[in-house]
Image 1 (cartoon, rainbow over the protein chains, first blue to last red):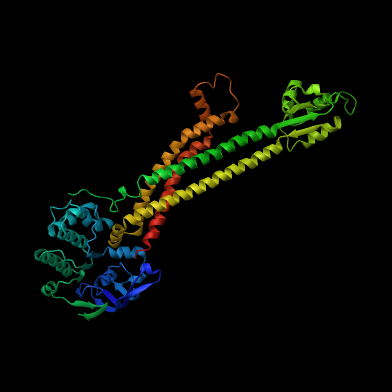
Image 2: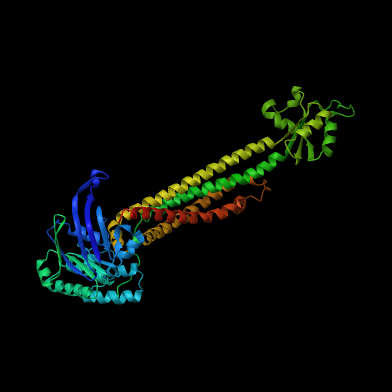
Length: 227
Length: 308
């Protein structure tokens, strides 16, 4: 379960000196998503969607309020436990964040190797997921050698290869054509049916309408609709 | 299948690959010189202390005058007494020529012609306790005014000098270790800055701080050990050359003919190097490994604390 309880977030302005704060990016956010739930996260640019996702995948601490991720109070876990919790969260970043010196195969294998999975298991799962996203013939390609859409598919494959308990995706279909977007949503809904909690931030209204699910709607750092 | 890449941080091309080993080599070179200096000074001081402390010099004024008991000359009485005195061995009367030679810097080459009342000088080896005051007291009863000096005071000064040299060497080693640690920390910080995005990504994927720190520390250790080994090897010829210069002070002067030729000179240099140096030199890369590992670990873990 994901639970936000009156969560506020401000970013520090380093150029204004230590302790200087910008305006509130998130204001009094409260919601719950049950285990195995699916939520669209929508709202205009600058509404705070990416900031909210960062809090969910433990890349940021809130300035105020309480966050529970998979039953764990996020502010009270040790650094080691936080790292172990992150291994159970798959993240599709808006900017992909592929490692430039690693091949598509090695980028996708990275979470499994960090979790010290056996290499034969890594090979089987990575090959399968890259085949599923249509990159079976691009295993050895470096990110620079891939198109934007291919890079996005590698990023998606990396997020789901470890069968995460929670999948967080920030505009995962932004660089994909309709067919690839459809395949991606098939994959995500399949994972969701298997018990993965899913939160997808998107501007794509057609996609939201094609795959009906409860929405978290944001505007100016506030949650304007939930459900 | 794609080639397996075991290093997600790409550290095989990180950490200023050539700069860090070169700087660590320079530190290792200085450390080798400091250690050699400390060990050599200890060895030489021990030898000098023994030689100096054991030297006993006795001056008998008016050597031809009768002694206190009026039985013999003062010189003969002192010589007889020295034969049976505990702790005194091998008393030798300095010849007139030897005395002239000693006094030449002050009195010219023929001191006797000046008509000065020169004392007789006896050298001996002293193995008794203390500074030899008891000898002077005993001899003064036979020949008033007789002086007896041992090298104890000089030995104490040599001990103090050796202590100072060892303290300096220890200070140099501490400074070298601190500078070496700082160099590794700087190189590690540069590597972290270059790979900030990569580290943030693998941190987000669930890498433990220990995983990331270990990769940097392993790389830093390899580079530090390489540099330290190179520095120690480069120091060896210099140490051999210094040992050649110091060899005459460290061992008795050998027979002419035996020292001719590079081989004999090298053999003497090797023999005169303190044995502990051969143990200390391989310790330099080990020390560099420890410093490199610890410094990189601390730097990376401190840096990672900035990440959530």
